[in-house]
Image 1 (tube, rainbow, N blue to C red):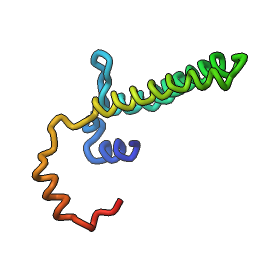
Image 2: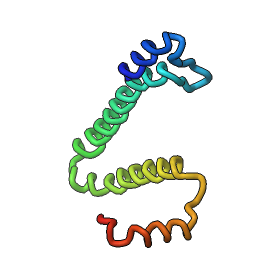
Image 3: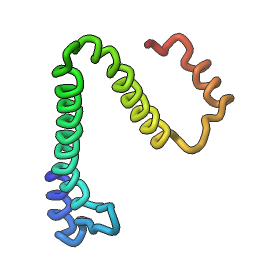
Length: 115
């Protein structure tokens, strides 16, 4: 990031770099990237702390932690898959793939594709 901004300043001056601005709840440009360096770890830490405390007090401090863990486990799985599905749906391509062009690409690559 620093190298890109540095090259932009070197070739076009400080005005050639879009430093960013905040409008509503989103910031763009360099400002948005720098804010994400601080906000992402803070939010991840908050979620991790919440999960840890939830597990600590609801499961580990129960009179029968194993039985409680068996009851709470489906909730963890449900939340995990809900977040994952929501993320995939929000970031999925809006235009569906044309099946004929997809089949042509698979046929053309054939056995060259390894998994």
